[in-house]
Length: 128
Image (cartoon, rainbow, N blue to C red; front, side, top):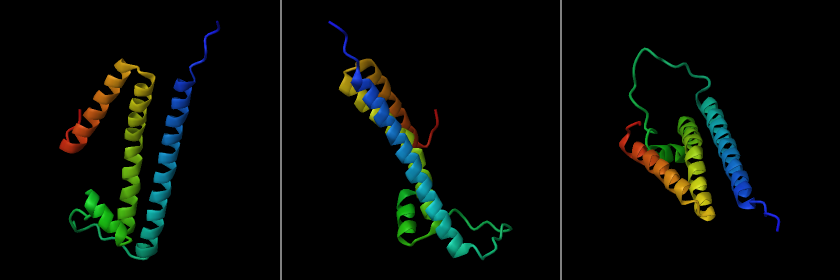
């Protein structure tokens, strides 16, 4: 009896590849759109770098959402950058789901440990 090819593993790799491609394309589109909005609204003004005006409002998720609702270009750019950062995290989540589907418990545990490290680092602000 001939061994059947393992299509699950290949299908999961294809799905993860699509997740990465779509995540990068969507984030590029959002950043580009935010750049266009920013240039439309501020393209004619000169920036004064001699004084520090403080941290902008869109450094936290609620500020980004409020900035997007106010149609602020820098907030839209920041949202695109967050999408770009979230894409590899989504890739790790998809890998965990794939390993669970394959019942590969060793790699499932390793992937979940990686996810925990990522989330703890994001929540506490500490890097490895």
